[in-house]
Image (tube, rainbow, N blue to C red; front, side, top):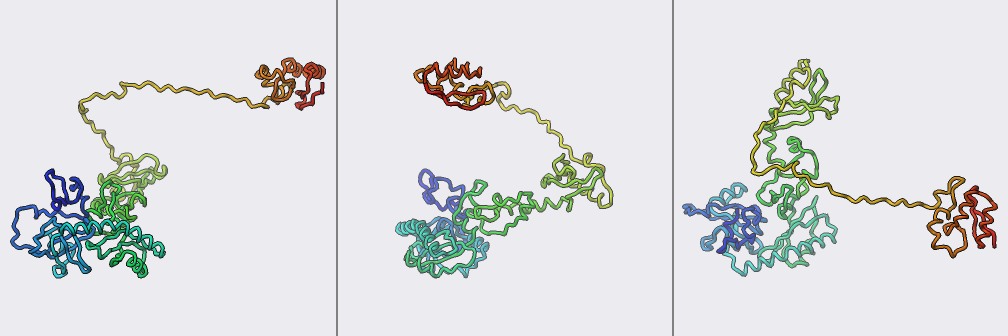
Length: 458
């Protein structure tokens, strides 16, 4: 791709773009062109003195007149003259290929006014590197100033000239922006000549670059030069779902690649019948569910099934015949006899060099430890009914050992075995005898009534 413009060392690693041998991907230079004539030992009898010069790795290009005393060829870094000073770029095309490129961009030889002054030396490249290092900090500060002035605009990129005398600010905005006050702040802050240039969303993505949903670099930043309008009709012709998030690119607009295969789809759609959404048969009305454009097949389902029943595959020619019958008032019996039946391909098994062990090796089942859930008995759940014990009787056996020194029979404490048996009988005399036997103060339980009674003092 752009490898002819990169000098190489003894190991073959390019020194110019520092991409470590990845120039074949085209990522080292945006909108790069391959000057294949410069790598051939062909003497040009009628040399063309205009060359194409690329700035900031293909961010923008221009045509300049190459004088004989410069002795610059394709791949050389050169110093060119501009209307506001000097700039440093790299020659990407020379010779007859430049003539074709100028014809493509509709540029005449009379419009080329600036010239190449000389080859760039080390000092020129150092100043260029210093200018590139200032661009990021300048863009951050420029965005902050525009936000403080409450301007509805976005600074997308900043490009310094090679001599650091001029800075170009690329911005996007929905409408016209009055940036006269903004330019005064920029000139006071950055001390350079300011140029504001408004670009669109697609041009901004082309300058910034990135990776698309296909996994490759953006077409607009690598090879696409003209931006054609893209509409949702291109997605409908290709039977794509109208999903804004999937059809939009990095710029927020519809993807440019929707137009790449549109002509092929339009040619294939000419073989299909028009207005074939419904077919009338004796079995009912069939509606069109989907279309396979390149195979020439149309899938129908009966309207009574709401498109969720069995699908019948018909060829486009059969659908034309059915439409002709419907116009005459005739109807076929059904779509079963007219559908296309696909036969399973009887392919011989191919020896892959290994054995299929599917179903031969079985892994043992994973043993899982079953955790038993502990049923926690809540106090007071058994207080229903005439023969049930009171609150403290449920835990009386578990609390016998730890509460022998306590002489009360209150709720939640020790319960005596004999007292619990007396309580079950429901006799008032035995209950009072039990209290006198303990010799303490406590509360008695009257389970027959379900109420609590105060104990007698000893």
